[in-house]
Image (cartoon, rainbow, N blue to C red; front, top):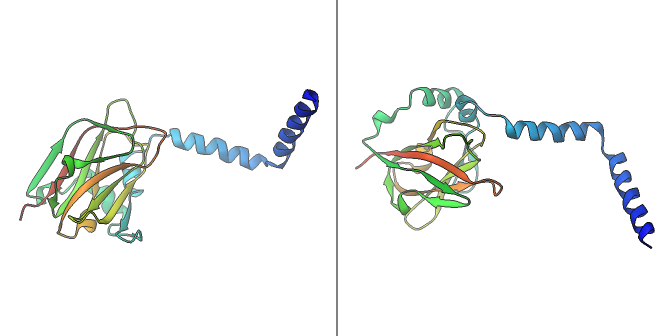
Length: 183
């Protein structure tokens, strides 16, 4: 009986491997290789995605504008900033404990030394706890990334939540900033 089960298992494994093409093996190896690659800040910036309150993707910036924003962030146009220290989270965390900010321009995140960023999203909520939009950022970058979100908040007051988009790794940031305007 044991031998019959073992032979059946071996036949099943061999059968599955016969149906897998060499291309699927290559794709699997490439996916693993890509997940270990470190993205430059410019590459990460061009992969930022913006979603409105209905989950529809929109494009408030060109790739060139997102790259330029990283090189010369226009933080001087915002009248105020809020800074926060080291944070680690596996699911979500409220920025400033859920404090609202008016007319938010961007959120800058600095990855903890020796780590790479995991895929995250910055979510903007109104005072009624309704999601008004989110910005999704790929993982794999190191250093600091300034994430523009002005297109999500449209001059209104919102609180922000950071969401770890992967359950496999913990998000680790050494510091961060919210740039906004005080009325």
